[in-house]
Length: 59
Image 1 (cartoon, one colour):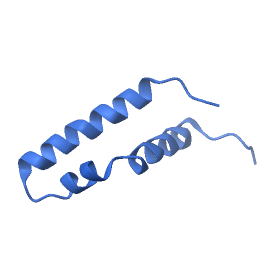
Image 2: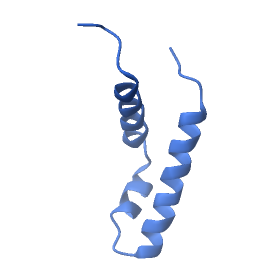
Image 3: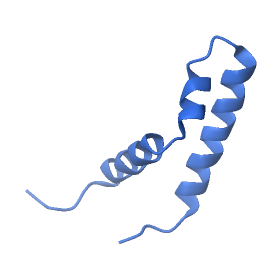
Image 4: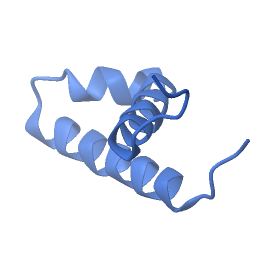
């Protein structure tokens, strides 16, 4: 077995780390019953993810 991760495993790990670092206010709004609050939170989280995916991998 190899020590390197497959590209999908690496992506999954990166996305998991991004979501784990999401601010509590975003998490609360994602769970909100208010559609406008959920929509804002989804947009913010999508921007956070997009930004993190553009950054070069750090060692």
